[in-house]
Image 1 (cartoon, rainbow, N blue to C red):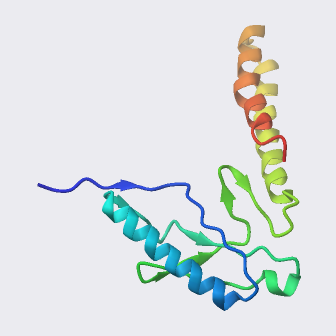
Image 2 (cartoon, rainbow, N blue to C red; image 1 turned 180 degrees about the horizontal axis):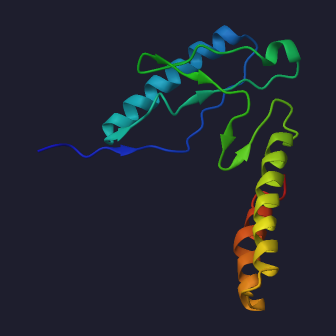
Length: 145
């Protein structure tokens, strides 16, 4: 009988330290512990979907790529990781996140404008519902950032 395996998603390990070498060692051991835990519960961590990132106040140090490993595979480095739908950047100014949301909202507003100006006509209720579903929900999600 085959064992069931499930994918573990949206977990985050964070560490703060003075030296990158200490952080690499600590994160790699934490990843090994997490991998062991996942396997005990028949979960399957994916090294190809797991990333590492560095947040640092100095520009020269922020570009450092950590050598963190999960099950013998080195994790890829991501400058602008997305966590729970929010795109993070080194300065935590959320500029990347806001730029992505602006593009998304522009496309959705264009779609609404086409619905509103069409000759086959969309009713007021349809336009309102479409606006709430397409635009309002996207604009409201993580609006506090």
